[in-house]
Structures are given as C-alpha cells and as structure tokens.
Image (cartoon, rainbow, N blue to C red; front, side, top):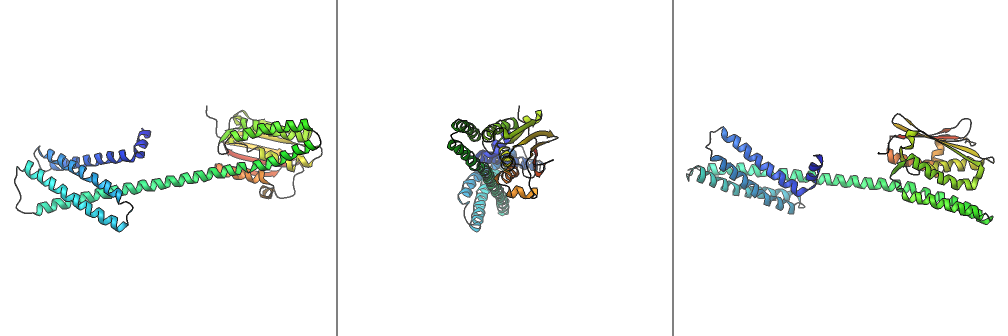
Length: 358
C-alpha cells in the first residue's frame, strides 16, 4: 500500500489528475449537501454536476499556463494568476448561469444583474483557491526535490570521504611491502620475494573486490587480515605472533572492510619491529548487548606519550580508522587507545552490532 502511494507521489502528472478529480468531486459533493438545505428539486443535481465539470475543464488550461510562467518574476506571476483566475471565473459563471436559468428555471431571467456579479465573485474566489493550492503543492514538490538533491549530494560526499580514507591506506601499505620485496631481491631471497608478491596480489584483489563504503562480515575481514599477516610473516618470520579470538556472534557481525589491517600494521611498526625477539598481537571480538567490541593489543615497549596524542600523531592507521568509524557511525561508536598490561598498547573499538542477513 505504501509502495503504491509512493509511486503515485513520484508520478507528478498522475498525482495532478488524481487531485484534480478528487477536488472537483468534493466540490460537487459539498454543493449537493448545501442544496439539500434549500429543498431543491432533483434536477438540481444535474446543475451541480455540470458546474463541477465546467470547473474541472477550465482549471486544466490554468495548470499549463502556470507551468509556462513558473520562472517569471513574483509580481508578474501574481498578476497573471489573478487575471487568469478572473477570466476563468467569468467563463465558469456564464456557463453556470446558463445551465441554471435554462435547465432549472426554464428560461426565466432575474431583473437585476446582482445575481450574476455575486456568482462571478464566488467563482473567482474558488479559482483563486485552486490556484493557491496549485502553487502551494508545486512549491512543496520543488522544496522536496531540492531536499532530495541535497541529501544525494551529502551522500555522495560521504561516500567520497569514505573512499578517500580507505584508499589513503593503500599507498602507505604498498610502500612498506614493495620496499620489503625490493630488499629480499637485493639479498637474493628470490623465493621469499615471490611468495610475498603472491600474497600481496591476493590481498590487493580482496581490497579491490570490496567497496570501502560497504560492510562485510567480521569472519571475512579476518580472512583479509590473514592475507596481510602472511605478507608480514615473510618479513618477520617467527618474530611475529598473532592470536585471534572471535565469539560465534562476532563472526557474523558487519564491520567496515579492511579496518583491522591498519591497526595491526600500526602495532607491527611501533611494537613488533622494535623488538629483537619479536612480539605478539592479540585480536579479540565479542558481542556485548547491542555492541560489537573489538580489541587489538600488543606486548610491545609502549610509549611515553599520552595515548590520546598517538591517535593524531601516531601515523595514518589510527587517525584514519577513527575517521572512517566516525563517518560510518557518527556518534554511535567509541575508539579508545590505552596502555596494555603488562606492556604495549591496547585499542578498543565499540560499534553497533549489525547482524548479517540470513
């Protein structure tokens, strides 16, 4: 039912004819009810129908006239509308008077012209009301169109922002990976370089296949993360240890595509890479009521800077991820960076829990 109403509102031409027919039917109905109070003869129903039909026909040209002068200056638009309403009312009054005196009064004519003037004035007010409704509905539709365009422009800007934030990470990640491959080639580790290039190809394919403005199940996000970690393990070998713990509910939760990779990359760069013996990164995800909680913690050396400063000064990964979450969820998220116990850093992200459709 709602779909039919929406289709009717979207079809402006059909919407006009529905309102036109309903409006003049209402006019005829009100006139008929008024005639019952004066004990009119049954034939007066024909007078009412003819009058409503004449009004229906006479207002159709007004629609096309108003559409042609729509972009005129306001004062000119008002003058033309008044003149057109008066001319239409005069023609309608002549038709109405003719049908009334010829059909209902059998050719009798009143001695005074006051009746004709009063009828024309009444018809003029009705035509003005019709014109006012037409302009009011037209302006409302125009405002709705402008609102829709503004929403579409905002949506497009929002999508462009999300794409920019996601794709901003790719050059940063590619630089590090290609630099590592170049180093492997220079030291004659061609097999490792080939393995790393294969993993990189798979990761980039995943990145291209998933739009930055869309959300994917967390389980699939972890698959992409494993592709990235396979690349990094070529560089760090046994020095890099990663544990991933996902609740059953969390696996099916929707998350922004590739939002874990920059956080893991940040931990590797500022924690694991600085430790000769290597380190461990732990990724946890669980559902708490209507929120999905994701925690990324490392056992690196940590930092002496306040954690809040690291979000803005700690490279692209942290700030970029926070900005993406803000663009996607507005105020319905939290991004917290704190010191981990006994050492390292801990990132906790809370976003609305959204389940994958069955």
